Image 1 (cartoon, rainbow, N blue to C red):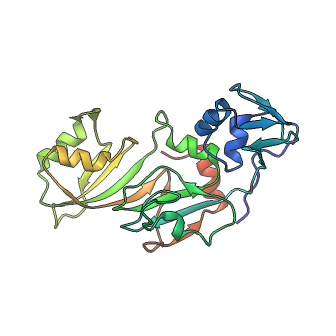
Image 2 (image 1 turned 45 degrees about the vertical axis):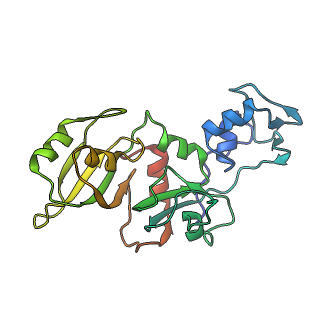
Image 3 (image 1 turned 180 degrees about the vertical axis):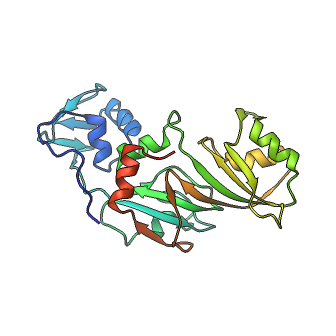
Length: 249
């Protein structure tokens, strides 16, 4: 898949951290750390000042290697269980990168994380600018999970989760919650915008339930429709434009 470039004018000023993010080197926030660490040069001059602007015609190096804007790649993966959401794993477990290694020559990486045993929708891209938008704490993106618990969930507990419960890192509430099956009260669907770590598991654990299985069925407008477990596909132009514009919940 080839996507239309967002920045086409070679003379248009662009922040250095955004340029690094758009090149696939890292996220924008990570770029700021690299700039402050003195490992980024522009036209052979080390740059440490945040907010520095350049143009595409400037020569940028990162750790003495030239940096260029790569073609953008956007992939949605239906993550399987027993698979870690990292670029590499010291314990040599299966990673999401192993599943998409044939997708492209560009260096892509997962946007956000899913626990090793959590399955479902995961976006991978080399668009660091978009990745920052989707994971920034202030820009909470809608996520929907299908949760299987170790016992039936009381209706009162669903109401508690909807109204808000107190966890060790503050109050949290679901934007929507209901039984996923009228026949099986141990299955729940939950819609949430928080990006806090292991938030769905912690919500249910705080009320005395154990999450047996957790599947993310929706993230930032993306679903796993027509994707079997462990399979991936390229996003189409319309989906990419929707993500770029933030035209979703």
